Image (cartoon, rainbow, N blue to C red; front, side, top):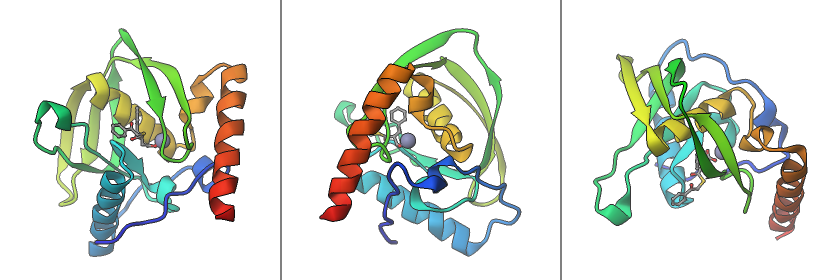
Amino acid sequence: MALLPIVLVPDPVLRQVAKPVETITPELRRLMDDMLETMYEAPGIGLAANQVGRLERVIVMDCADKHEGEEPQPLQMVNPEIIATSQETNTYNEGCLSIPEGLGDVVRPAAVTLRYLDPDGQSCELEADGLLATCIQHEIDHLNGILFTDHLSKLKRDMVLKKAKKIARDRQAG
Ligand code: K1U
Ligand code: ZN
């Protein structure tokens, strides 16, 4: 497995819409394994293909609470689709591995039902709530070129992105 560089704002790949996967190849499975390794190392709880410069509709995540002693729960999803959402909403102070040091309260449906293919091409359905539901929506937003900052007020969005872009520039300058 390999660690992949994580793309930072304002890279245009973060604004592109990823394309559905037609065939799950060994190369795609390898990409998803590399994405999981990259996510764990960051560390983060999710990662979408756009964030490693790829435009296939694949996401990975693990929302297990290590501090509560939960076992890892890695998920690798191909062509994820939200097929139902709750009326009830939930607010979570989200971060993003592509927006360094950015945090903001995002309101989203509290529960979602998701359909996706697993790495073996099996069709799966998952009902999620809590942090997993939030993370799924954040990652599918990435596949659609949407960042969590798009859900914030303009004032908050501009503040978060200005700071993140400066950090990204400084990191690139070494
Ligand atoms: O997609 C990403 O940018 C990853 C992002 C996912 C996410 C976080 C919060 C709410 C929704 C989606 C992250 O993982 S940011 C880092 C983070 O949340 C975290 C890092 C270490 C431990 C626990 C959480
Ligand atoms: Zn993100």
